[in-house]
Image (spheres, rainbow, N blue to C red):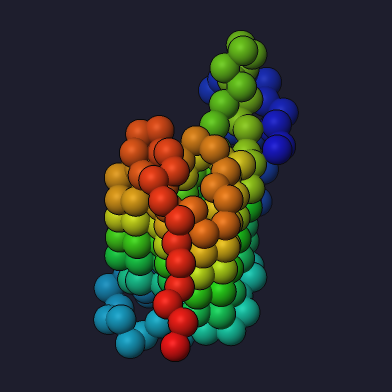
Amino acid sequence: MKIFDQKNAFSSPWSRKEKVMMLLWGYVWMLLCSWTPKPFNKWRIFWLRFFGAKISGRPFVHQRARIQIPWNLTMHDHACLGDGAIAYSLGEIEIHKFATVAQEAYLCTGSHAFEREEMNLITAKITIGTHSFIGARAFILPGIEIGDGAVVGACSVVTKSVDPYKIIAGNPAKIIGNRKFATS
């Protein structure tokens, strides 16, 4: 967890350079990526890498996904950030191999120190484990780790880290089962 130093609730925690880079990123994504068809994934990945995202293998990023700060995003081979998914990456987000973040899911790494008058920005890393699945419109809070193979049900609000191969759902999300893979 990182607590940013701010003079008051209205001051930005970002440097001038970071603000310029975030503004530039927003325009690049809007003008060069958001309209591209699905087969142009390599083009979108190129721009993510150009802006500092850590990419390994061949992940997929939908053209309507939104990434706040690409240099805080790590995606591994065959990871997927779906249609309308939001990676609110004020802090780090790591999506491991074969993990899927479905449509309109929200990964939120930021909150505020509400006990302080300055309401400093607080960020904490979100980790999405290998072969895990985040359902449509699920909301993942800062600092959450989704274990390998775990499933988060649609519209769930995840307030606690999830153990591997658990199936969770609800608000707040609770364990509703275990995930088992069929063997051939």
